[in-house]
Every structure is written in C-alpha cells, then in structure tokens.
Image 1 (tube, rainbow, N blue to C red):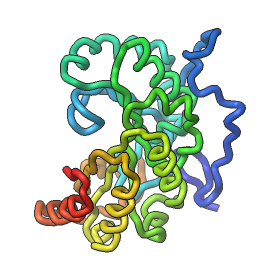
Image 2: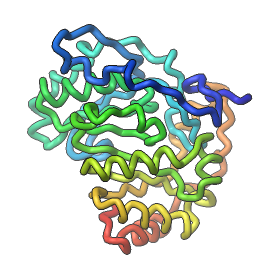
Image 3: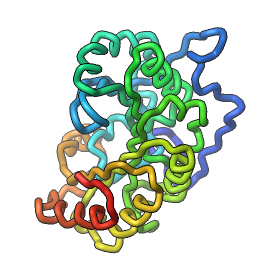
Image 4: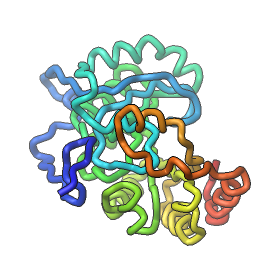
Length: 276
C-alpha cells in the first residue's frame, strides 16, 4: 500500500478523527494550556494569501501529494520545527500595526493547516482576538471535517483549493478523493463563511473546458464565493523535488499562456464570479 510522504497516511485510506478528543481553540478555554505545532516557516506576503499584506504561517504536513506542488518540502510534518503558539503570535505582533494599515491580516497555510487542527485553531483565535487581525485559512478542504464550528467562527475567509472537477483527474493529481472538499464547501456556504476559490490551470491536465465549467458552476451555486483565483501552473519548485530525490512528472509541462488564463477566467466570469 502506497504511503503519502507528507503525513504517513496511506493513499486512499480514510482519515479518522474524533472531534471530542480535539479542543480546537484552547486559547478560548477557561484554563489556558501551552500548545505547539510543526511549523515549516512564516513570511509576509501581499495579494496571494488573502487581502492586503499578510503574516502567513506555513504549517508542516499534508495528506495530499499534488503533482504540481511547489512546496513538497512541506509534506512531512516531522520535518517542520516544533514551535509554540506564543512564539508565532509574538512574531506576528511585530507587524500588527503595518498589517492593519495595509488592510491585511494573518493566514494559516501549509502544507495542510487542518492536519494540525488544534494548533491552527489556537493561532486563528489569538490572531483574531489578541492581535485584532483579519484571519484566513488556506486549505484543500480534504480534512474539512476537522474544523469545528468553533474554529470557523475565528475564520474571516477560507482560501479553498479545488484542483479539478473531474474525479479521476483529482485523484491522479492529489492521491485523494474530491468529495470531502465539496462537502466542506457546502458547510462553509451554510455557515456563511466568505470563500475564495483557488484553481491551478495546468495545460494538458486541468484546462479541459468541461473541467473548468464544472468548478465554475459549483462555485457559483454556493452563494458565498467572492473571488476565484485562477493560478498559472509553474515549475518554481522543481529544484525542491530534485533535492528531495522525488520524480517531478510535470517537468515538461508548459505554463499556461496569457490567453489560456484569460479564457479560464472568462468561464468563471460567465457564472457571475469575480475571477483574477
């Protein structure tokens, strides 16, 4: 049985989780307890991880193994640095005034943030309530069941990756099933949580008109999608695959042309969505 390098979860296996054993926002508990998680890195970014300038915390570990991943070094949780929530929040606090003036906030990304739901929930809660920052959760949605309603109340925006509408292609791209992502999207719609959809356009893989149309129609049906990011496939992470001794199978795949990107965005716009 194949095993994903990121989380040591076998490909195709269900991801079991008992929410009664996982307090998602310990910072909100009466008695605060120290908490830490596996952090790959953090950085400041503008325009790509939510609105404005943002403090982005990249958590280590991911249950997906996307063929076009530009950060395969984030797949293994054990390769991250054990870091306390206090340390992350203190680092973000250094930039709070600048971030707020720039209309930004804090984003939890990965890897897959929901592989560490307690730690992610702790950070979201403290970013929002202690630092007064707009919060965003960047996720594939595959582990959306791990996000309790309490956690999502501390999330202003979800950046939801929908990598393909074609189920067979989705499994080929990620090693996982699409259904959990769609279920999570419906749940976010029911909660009224703002969502930006992220879709990577890969020539010869995800660029089929029916594939794009399927995602566009689904996104439009939700009622809470305020933006769609059509992201061009790139090979900036190729050297990381080589350094890790992994086979980058999309080595010869070109990036999409400006015309291909514009055509994809037009499909989303045709469904009344703002596509960038």
